[in-house]
Length: 196
Length: 225
Image (cartoon, rainbow over all chains, first blue to last red; front, side, top):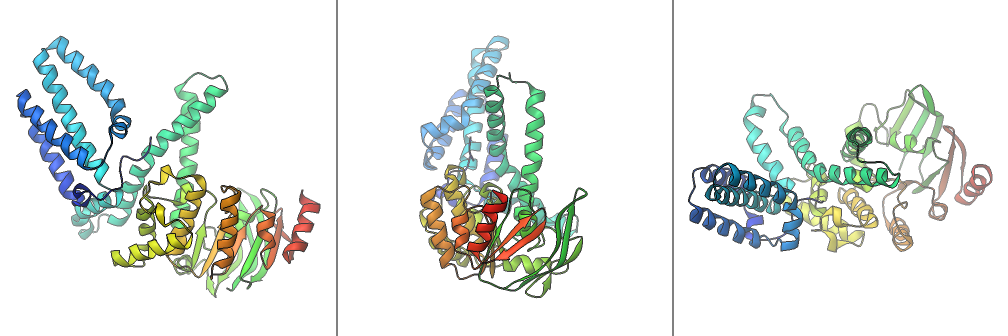
């Protein structure tokens, strides 16, 4: 698994990150009040078109959402059993629309753009002298950057243990994961220091 | 380049990793050689204040690493062994831009500097690529471009060829020869070190030989292989 961001030059890539995040938040709020499946279908169609405009292929889309797809299916099945087919469909459409809308933002917004948003949001706190916004924004950017790396690291450790005939035990996974993460954090901090 | 080590000693975890190093570095190309654990990494980390000596003093162009670390780091470009630790952002151009932000406020000038640096190392086509899709060699070149973009006065390389295949390694050697800045290179790549003007051999935290490359390499092969 790599970064969710997809470099590109679409009009969505050029929109300010803050605007995209604001619209996503508004869409999320609005969808909670919509129960008509036809309106939800319309929203899904609009969001799918936006996603297509970012240049994301179907294969790349599937690689980014497949983990959540099975979770969504389970949720819909549960809703079908305890409520009704109508509720299950509305839930599926609503969550899929939100998921794809979040993906539109993730795919078209670089970490630098997100850091700019964090800097802007934290400005009032900096004026009060409570936080160093540059440091917080860098920590935020690094966290986003390292999430996919941690996933790869987990996969590497699992593979190495499987090669030794060990089953997937959370404890035996957690220890090397923690040690490697700490060492990696120290090395990255050193490299950032060296860059001035 | 003028870097001075004045009776420098370093201890880590109660163990002496560098002992009474006293020398001046003035040549354009200096190699550092030694077995694993001999103190090479410690030696180069002293150059830009990533480590500070317990005893003695390190001066870079007259600036003390204890007092002027920020100024020294703006003069020294450090290329790490593992480019994954050095590259902070997921897109190549974004990462180079990050290093330039503190020096250049104009985004267009930064973009130009990034492009020039990528051209200098021969990979301008990687500018908009995601870092995790690059090969190890390409990442190493991108890490070097990120360092060159900020136009440092001195370059320090920690095992720069370990992740490169033969073709990229040869390209790196040519590139190193053509760089205008003085460079200090820690490496086990003996052929690369033959192109240096002076090679220091470290063993058990001591500089055991300070000689022209052929003499230093012959000694190393005889005593440390």
